[in-house]
Length: 90
Image (cartoon, rainbow, N blue to C red):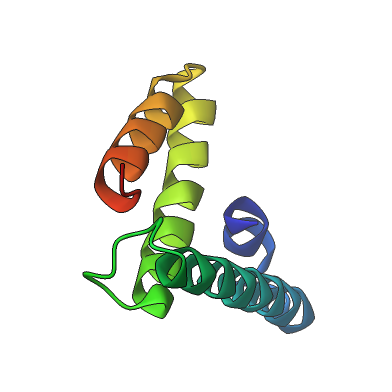
């Protein structure tokens, strides 16, 4: 979605708003899932679910861009490794 937002968002307000709405909805769903995981003791409670959702969504969009530019899966693997190690409770 970030790629569409960057390419089209500056020239089309309806597209910018549609992409923003999609990302906002995704963030809300992610925050709900994180909150559920925190309630069940599977995800760290060091940070609020909304903050973690923002971080994950922002980082993921950057990871996708780097993976595409590099034509390499290493950014994805690094993201998954750190995310799992830091957020999930063993």
